[in-house]
Length: 231
Length: 407
Figure 1 (cartoon, rainbow over the protein chains, first blue to last red):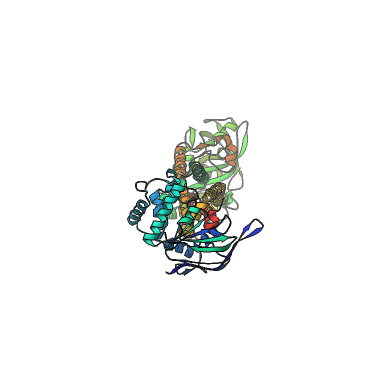
Figure 2: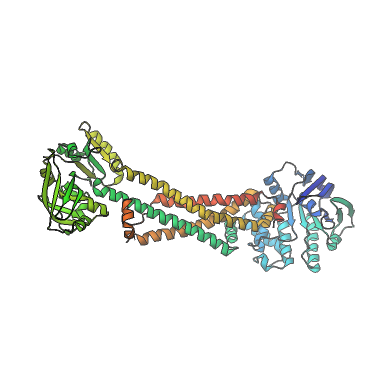
């Protein structure tokens, strides 16, 4: 098994008014390819911060991060954007989709940024929407979809460009348990069939049940790191 | 698809977009319309200046511009007119004149005037007087004591065609010359001051009265286009070198008018910028609001892998579409307004004295020129994009995390 994510000595602080918050302190983490892992912990523990740093959405104060063979140090904004575009998929808790685009256009958008031809974009987007169970809803705008359906579109968009890794920040937070469970099952299926690595930031027990590895984070440090039996 | 996305983003908030559009439309409309009015004023001023006896090119004896007296007359105009016959292009007109200061009087009134002796047939094609007579008749070439009087002066003198008018001036020998004329016609000019200042008799009658012989005060030339004036004046100056003449274009003869024209060009540009500044604050404010409302979306786009420059391009594309539509409508309204007023113009008679002081016509007809149209559109387009650059760059500079937590 190869290592797809390697974090060494990661520290990050934020300013909240006049107060300096130590979000992460000297965190080391490695993730194997094909992993289905949860970063768990209470609110404010630093799990979302760590996820954002892995995704290149923010920069650590110290330490190094390597994702899919690419070290983040010294990459500028455009280079980081290119890295995210080609290697990383994102699913957020809320506000995942572009409101003026339909479901299929939202999924196409990543491929548009990559420069994929229009016909190919459309065909692949529809295929992936079919895979996530949204056949026939291609032209619906986000406002015309339920929360679960919107998250499915987000999953479709996250995987359509064949990323190496998908980062999901509280993906089930705004969903009922049944919808959340079916979404997790879908992502697990993607993980098994396509060997896409999934890392979740969550405090949802259901997500932790699905995960094969749970890293507990508390007060900006890794508290525990458990592998579970395969699902 | 980028254009499609930009178009949809524009109409997310139709009210806000409509407000910006209206601001752009009104701005462009006012730039074009008021710019055209100013051009109309300028055109009127040039027209008045040229047709009120100046012409496009004037030839005088060398000292005449500094001392416009009978002593500084052109003694041998025939030599000059021969050159003019050869040198002037088709469509040009010229005529000789006598011009002296005089006192006009009748039984009840008197006034200081400028007496102008003209060649009636030639003068018709040259200046306003040929088509200005509204009562009585125009002069004929063999008239010896007929005189044309301005409407305003006739009113002041309480006189009319057929009545007598006495003219008194200094002749070529330095003696007082005095003669009675009979009013043949009343003329109406663009400016009341012209009607009060000028009296017209035939050139021969003037030369006889002033004992000038064949001498004249000036030769006035009208060219097919005022743009030819400077070049023609230079050419004639060369051709007539050695004859102690002053050959001047209308720009040199009317330096105040020339200064006005140069000032107006700058003034129109300043007007464009002022209108834009007023409009620009509205555009900037609204664009900033629109951008900051979408900061989380920009964070999402960056997370998906959109480069910062593309975010800038996206926002500027939206701005460009709004500006373009606004410019199109503003141009349409501006051009239509000018077209609608091109038939009757705007009548400023109520302000007659004020406009006359500035040399303006009483009726202003807007004139749209390509330079002003292009200038107005470019100012709005380029400065519009420039003001939108600030919010665009601001949006692009946030990190994805900062953008996504932005309230």
